[in-house]
Length: 337
View (spheres, rainbow, N blue to C red):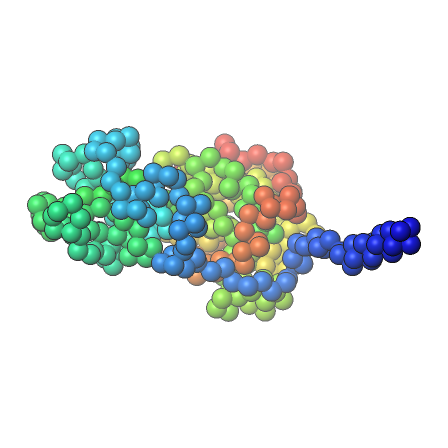
């Protein structure tokens, strides 16, 4: 018995010794080629995946063709919304514009026209009647029904469940290059009034450049942060202040230890007003002599924004690492209004 017990213990030790814990996955090395980010296959997500993505109320309406009560809390919020756009709360597809909505008195959000190609329809014979059901053309999520008793110019009434809609206020876009884009994104993402910040490449000649290609300096691109913001909450002048206070705009093609054309200080303007404001701010900062050298920031019209690989997005939040170094000089009092 003792011999059998000893052999059994040895066998167990040998089996356990062959099982090694999985190695920790290291963050991608700088310049590593990563697979491109892909959209979910919205039309073929499983029921379990939809339940994970949606609230119970959204799931009931979008995936089970439910109907929310008239004059519900979501409808009250809808009535309070101003100018903006309405998107599918399931997949984010742009469905309606606020200027096509109207007060139908029914207790549900109503529109006389959807965005072209965004809303599809099918015959609905439920509840002993014939109606035209409308759904998101991308994810097939149930939205509501359409009737022919709407106002001009279409005469249609798209009667939509409020829970099927996600409202987005009007936004403006600004694009900045200020060295390594990891820290730049983190700074702008934390700025009140900024709705979204993402990193990418702009100002070069290569289409769909990779991080490795941009780092080679052969493409001419700069690492940039594209900022989408609510102009009613933060002005372009205030964003310029964040930009100039959080990097050194006096070093050509360099930010601290990062040297190369891709690290240049640059403002890519989206209209004439942005261009004039940026140039006026530069002139004001130079005249103030608060910096030891003159500003070398390039101000050029915005070109195609190529979104960077997914592992670069929200890098500071994911990794807690950043090479960003603010210089500590303040310029808010010089900012254009």
